[in-house]
Image 1 (cartoon, rainbow, N blue to C red):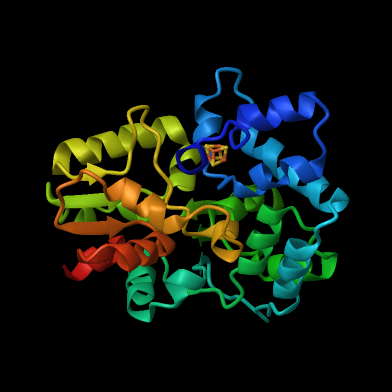
Image 2 (spheres, protein in one colour):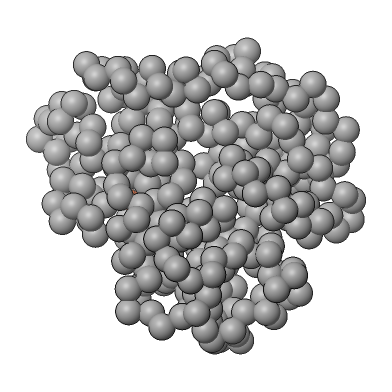
Length: 299
Ligand code: SF4
């Protein structure tokens, strides 16, 4: 937010100070809804405040009290269109998300690569609408939630593209093993051995900050071994592209500007993204070849 707005209102401190001085929800709504929920501030906060949790809770209140109902109605309409899976039989399921589903060849590679002990199957209902409602702070009906969760109750292992949804699934499905797709693929040596010093490797920012200490070690090692560029800043936080989630649905920040910022000053010949939304955003701005990490399988 700061990189694009250069305005203290668009920062966690700005939001907190505004609330302390009795700002209304309408006044802080632009900042609340510009936040990408990337989690970079969570891992830097010296008081270990759950800032993204605070912003999510404030979004709910802001929507309840706001005079502007446009976002609420748009997300609700999206929820109403969702379909559910009738049955899921497999042990390992992938909730791929729209961007990955839109590239079937890459999706097939993802399914093959994630089929270790048992074959990984694709869920028809991957909860995109629920993820969006969670991000926007909009109530999800019990009926919709039940239709989404009920078929997943017996699944042993779940790979999820949307990290905000994954965080919530930890509470909804406590017995299920949950993984993010991009980070799981980044642990496969068959893929990462194909990275080199001319590559920019794009970490999915939300997944990275979710388990920050372990991930810093993992990606530092990857950078050290392969010599590739990575979208990390000097504090070892991943710079988000702003290409997914609520910002893709109702843009508050310019994703193309984010991408140009990430690319600026780098001398690379290829871009490899962990997340399908990031790959799409990169392809729209850069003339370099842009791959999803699963595409390294055949590179
Ligand atoms: S979650 Fe990301 S975009 Fe939101 S305030 Fe924190 S660092 Fe900024």
